[in-house]
Length: 279
Image (cartoon, rainbow, N blue to C red; front, side, top):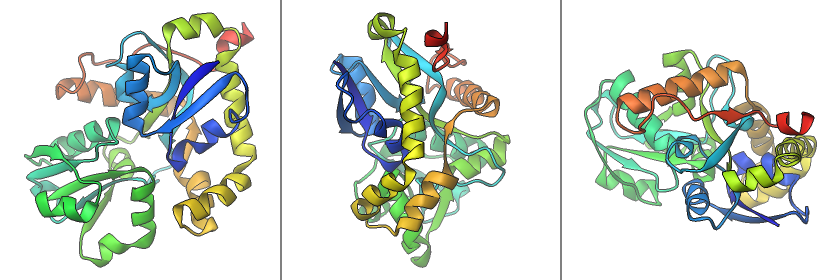
């Protein structure tokens, strides 16, 4: 049985849906940052992890063709990766980082520094974005809490500025952003390479085919209207990654390395999902 560190947010649900009930896997749901830690510690063999962790956790094989990303259309929002600020972005001096995030934590720093020209210090954020803003000029918020806040419009109603980081990245670079990819411990990949990548690809197809079942399951869980969950899965998140996504990934790693957030300016080599089995 392969242990999966599974992201507990809606954005990864289609990737996991088809694996539920498969006796070859045991899923444990947790935060994105903890998924990477589970692979690092060996308490899981695979997981959908923040892309930046592929460069930080040794001994992993990453899958190229599927993951959690922003859509490639110009102006597309992801709605669940937000910077909530009391000031214009260029004037942020203290930034609170969501503890669940690692890739988005790097992304927001790159955007503030390079797109907006801000000079700032970072500090741990608070689970409550309101309390976080009492200690910082702006806070990073990711996942389901960010989506609920975006849908509610509460931050805007309070006079705060809300920046969708996927939209800001694309407006700046012209490229879509990739947030998470499958990472597999090398020994588990070698032992299961003939079937595992293709099985993960099939699981996503099953999840996308069962989108209405996902909507029915997640809408009450998130206390959101079904149409908001449906819109999010259909219009905000991309799961099949294109050449533009790969270019966005390369641009992100180059900038992250230039800012000292990763060691190498290139993403680690990736294996395309399904490629091994087709051989």
